[in-house]
Image 1 (spheres, rainbow, N blue to C red):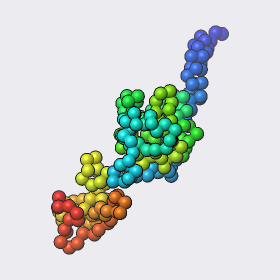
Image 2 (cartoon, rainbow, N blue to C red):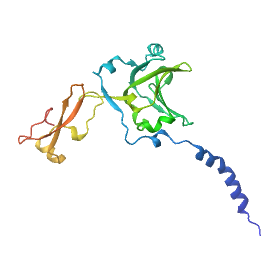
Image 3 (tube, helix red, strand yellow):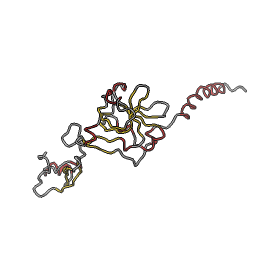
Image 4 (cartoon, one colour):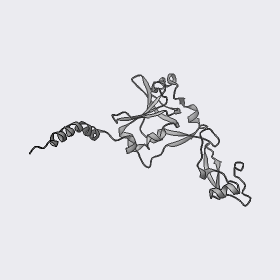
Length: 211
């Protein structure tokens, strides 16, 4: 008795073999290997290191630092992960050739938090400047080399969570179901910390007008 479906099944198996082999050989992404405990530091724009850092698009100045340790600042335009899975590249311009880049090799993937979370964020990068085929870049081996830029209240792009908002007036606070507000407390280093403050009997706002 003939089995007409057997040749069809064999043909499908042969066609699927390269795809399955490709999936099996695909290397894990940095996101899947990222540390669950490591964190990126933060830095204020008032910090001396930030003020002295190169702009990511100042390639002429960057060339002079090749072979030396330094820092640069900019906003990450793209977190690029080649199909090889051997590295991750942080690009600081839509056209990567017009700005510095930062490179993380696969052996260091697990030391960093998920690098994809950095897309669109302003950061300060420090490390050794190197030349790779005419492109100046900084090699990264640990999360301490990347610091996100701390945005102060009222600064463009700063959106504090609700727990950091000051006390509301009686009506709005009751609607929100909260009796606690916060006001930023300035630190000597130029940053801010959250300081919980319980609303008083007059329901006066802390740090901002009522809203």
